[in-house]
Image (cartoon, rainbow, N blue to C red; front, side, top):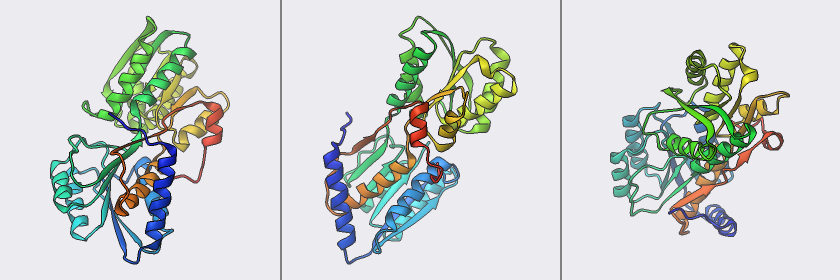
Length: 319
């Protein structure tokens, strides 16, 4: 069961952690293990951690990039522990677990914050915390909005990121389709291929599906990048006017597209990698200072429409 932190507890924890970090005489060394730094979403979390740490002269952050290699990530975590880090931040999407890494963390006894992706079977005795978006909430609010926008009828295509056991994608799609299933006149088709969470992948899957279906009214993708690619595929096929698009993440490229006059990208949902990184940093420092946190910290994951896209758009963000 998830435990939502009250805003007052969050504020107190962050204030406590910052004071403790600023007052400490000893150097605090933090390791950030990234499965894949190459995507802006994941890079945004890492950059946010470094920017927060820059405020404190006694905090050093060491980041690694496994280049999407789970074995390399396990090795990176071993190396960070060997370097004597006081705590770890792990950005491991889309892996579901790396047992050897969990064992190494357990044996080292260092506190750890998982950002974005919580590994399965995370039964650690060392202090741990997860910070990320509520994927089911994102899927549900987009589904409810698309169902309303289409008037409760129409054919909606779903493009998944993959692989088949990806828990984040599963949560988003299941919640989205459940929201649409309340209307008997909604038809849902799940594309057989995976878009790989990327613009090019979304473009390819959408191109294949456009060739097979002449009646697509709406498109839901498990993340924004795939939907930007799918949107471009529909435009290139001269079918943009037939459909609308919705996805999760609210990245700056999507917000900019939603702000464009006449855009058919009608909805996204908040999955702020910058916020995740900053909160994850402060939660780790809090644990190092002795603060007790619940293991699960879901962040706001609400619906973003055009009006709020204008307010949220920040071109200076990495993602």
